[in-house]
Image: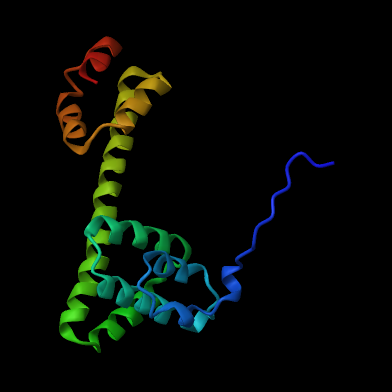
Length: 171
């Protein structure tokens, strides 16, 4: 006799045609387009329709970022496809195209900022290792968790720090 018996329906997104959901005003449907059934030739069209959906739903920037992040996790266009997408966006209504480009450029801008902060943290950890040889993992993790402004301050102070105690005090 089973103690627990779970019964649930299975939703196989790959078996669903993405075109059936592009008229939906459901943000989850927009994000899940990237997991639905589409051919390699349709990748650009799927992303274009995803952007149409976001523009139509007029969500706040935080929700746009969340949905775009999910979508991009599963359907990341290559360089050639990105160029095709830009060409397709150029063919549509100017106002809607501007909104689409705003969504994509804000996502790219956020990614570049995060990448710079990550790179700066990695560089500072390498400098600390060069200066002090053995850097505890605890300090590495603290440096990686610093906001951009504090990383900049550490970069300026790194040559003034004499001991790990100085580093810990700074952090």
